[in-house]
Length: 339
Ligand SMILES: [Zn+2]
Image 1: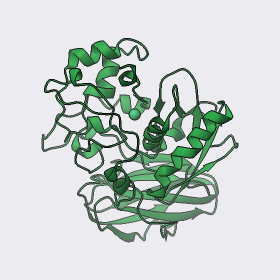
Image 2: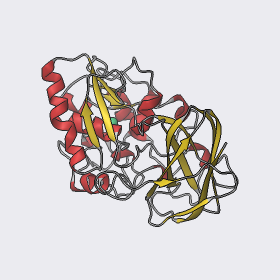
Image 3: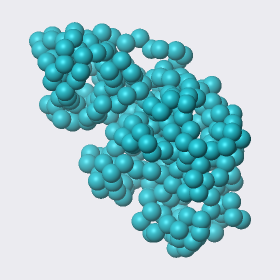
């Protein structure tokens, strides 16, 4: 039963660690804004550059072979590249299996990996690339209802090969996300994002077999409105740089992403903000490269509106807008950018 201990380590940015984990309890109605990470998703339709930091050609082939399974469903492409500016950088160190979540990879220094394979098979490649496109662990789904035998889980994972302390076990396995932190499917026991674990780890005998391929829900969700729907590049709305005129837009269906572009004709300090009653989150990418995350914001503007003020060089920039509540949120808003 050694395979059950091959468990992926969720890598968190220091900014997320500051957000007062453990997560909010389930079903509390009101939300606790301070703990909720904002979206990790890439811009819909992006081509993500994937590079290797070491590894044999056999190891690299396994990754190249299985990772693109996601892009048959999600509206993303993986481009394997030797370029040092890869968005996802894969290492093969004896350091367990882990990946940063989605655009968090852009906060990692370019000389460090964003994903590691301490062992290699189809399942672990699919699982880690699930993280890389922004998926979290299914066993931390608040709808999962898993009743952990906490002592048994902590005991097993505190030994090799994980050697985790209790806080790490809680973070990676026992804690559940609050509803608005996660994607919108019901608990999916077939998900590639679910760990396999034995009946001894739960109080009611529930256990999970190793899942080795994308489940039907994994595929549907990756291709759905809350992640990466459609094919190719979605239309972007051009924003004029103007302090006066806001462009009117709306999140028409839950999970929808709105994409805007604007051109900074000269270097300087620019502000991008939304207005209205809709609770939005904003991410800014560029210049010219829609994978280069510059900044993100939730509530720095008026009310629940995001606002970013950043020094930009000349060039074209991309603004991704989503509702804070990807499961249910919709509503109109205005957006403007000014210098
Ligand atoms: Zn994982």
